[in-house]
Every structure is written in C-alpha cells, then in structure tokens.
Amino acid sequence: MRPTGAGTDDFAIARLSAEVVVRVGLLLLLAVWCFSIAEPFLVPIIWGMVIAVAVHRAYERLRRLVGGRAGLAATLVSTVLLLVLIVPLALLSRALVDDVAGLAGLLDRGGLSVPPLPGWVAALPLVGSPIEHFWHQASANLGQALSGIEPQLRSIGVWLLSFVAGAGFGMLSFMAAIVIAGVLLAHSVPSQRLALALAVRLMGPRGADLVLLAENTIRGVARGVLGTALIQSILVGIGFVVAAIPGAAFLTLIAFVLSVVQIGPALVLLGAVAYKFSLGLTLGSVLFLVWCLFTSISDNFLRPILLSRGGDVPVWVILIGTLGGLIAHGLIGLFVGPIVMSLGYRLFQVWIEPEAPLPDAVSAP
Image (cartoon, rainbow, N blue to C red; front, side):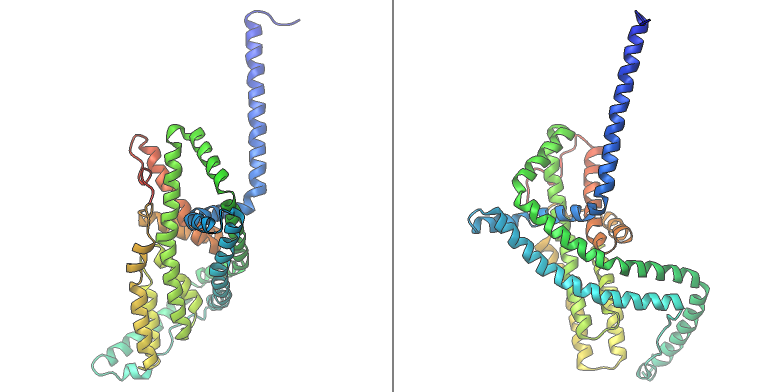
C-alpha cells in the first residue's frame, strides 16, 4: 500500500536525500581515487606549473621570434631549462650524495668531532694562547655532548640517508616538471582560459584578478627569492669546489637554504674561510676570501634585477615553505615549498579581507 498525503511528501524527501547522499558519495569516492592515482605526480605537476608561469614571458618572446610556432618555442625553452638546471643539479646531487652519506655515517658512528687546532694559530702573539685554550675546551665539550645525544644523532643520520636515497627521484621529478612545463607552455592559451574560467566559477567576479595575483606571486617568489638564492648558491659552490673545501656540496645546500630564507650564506662562508686560513696564509686563501665577500653581497644586485611584483612575502612564510618542503618532498621540496606557501599566504590574505584591493592584481609587472 503506497503512502499518501504527508507521508508521501516525507517519503519523497527521504528518497531525494538518499539519492543526493549516494551521488555526493560517489563523486567523493571518484575524487579520492583520482587523487590517490595522481598523488605520486602531484609535486612534479605543481613544479611544472610554477616553471611555466615563471618563464612564460620569455617563452612568448621566443614564440614571436620563431614565427608563432608554439610547439617549437616550448621545445626550445624546455631544452634550455634541462641544460641550465638539470646538468648543474645532477652534478650537485652526485656530490651531495657522497657528502651527506659520509656525514650520516659519522653521525651514526658518533665520530663527529672538532679537528685539531693548526699550530700556527696557537703560535699567534697575544691571542694564540686563549684561542688554543678555547679550542681544547670546545673539543672536549663537543665530544661529551655528542656522547649524550647519540640516539638523536643516529635518527638524524637515518633521515640524511633517506634524503640521499630520494635524491635520484628528485632529479627525475625535476626532469618531469620541465617536460610538464613545456607541455603547458605549448598550450598556454587554453590553459589560461581554463584557469580564468575555473577561478571565476569558484570565486566570482574577482576570479580573474586572483589568477593575476597568483601569477605575480609565483613569478615574484620564483625569480626574486629562488632565482637569487640559486645563483648565489652556485657562486658559493664554485668557490668551495675551487678552494677544495670538504663537504662542498652539503655546504652549498645549506647556503641555498639560508639564502632562500633571507639569512644569506655568510655563516657558511665564514666557516669555510676560517678553515681555508687554518691551512695557511696563502694567495689561494686570500683569493677565496675575496670571492666569499663578493658572493655574500651578490644578492644586493641580483635581487633588484630578478625581483618582480608578488615577491614581498614575509620571511617566516618562506622559511616554513622551505624547511617543510625539504622534509616532506626532499630536494624538489626546496623549490616547490616556498612557492606553494607564498601563494597560499597571499590567497589567505584575500580570503580574510574580501573587500580589500588585491595587491599586484591591478597592474602586472
């Protein structure tokens, strides 16, 4: 017997609700399933999008030079990026594997210690004796401190070894990201239309301005922050290799991280200069000092050249993105992390102040 009256309405509402729940559940299941399949490629895809946005203007100029052939221009850009980025990063990664593996072995064995003080330092007038006394104290205290935190050192060593193990995957991710960037550049017009349509659909009339804000933020951080840090760390690495500084690749990585978070590589350079002079006062050590001074101030003229609108993101956002990206995604996370965090920060600013004017969205650089 079929229900009638109010019972019929209740039954129809219940059936409609059940159908909605089933449909939404199936859509969520499909979305989760698609995400689980695409998850291994998520970071390269994001990095490929970042690269495409960062080099889009250079691509447009090149496309006009080759007669508007988008495929040829995208192929040329991807080839140049592979040569400029992959070759140095491959060499750095290979050296980094050796350095980090050696450091991880020392931490695992508890063999990290302060090296002996050079004899010529102890012989310096007035300051030699105090330096020697301080050095011996530091050596003894470091050994005692290391023996007390041996389990923590072993954990750090295990993490470093896992980081090394992921270096090869990181290089493959870089290559995949550049290929993805080339594909996006070759289809930049439909990609732009899709981004605008999606933004307007999700965020209304301000969607177009938000797309421009995201573009400026990505370009600003990629060029002004990561570009400056990458060039500066390359200069640091060249100096370390020429000066035969131990652990050059690992120290270069630290210098890159310090440059990204706006601290600068001065701390790493100071230690390297001290080590070089500890071997003797030679022409090589003096030239290395001059190179380090030039490298430490190079960001003062690199950043104004590379910086564009959207790069004025707080340092703490860059720091969280850099360290979090490194921990979560390894080598490629150093590049993806600060850009994603900066973009999220700028969009969050717009979300909490929906009526405020959008920074960098009115006039693109």
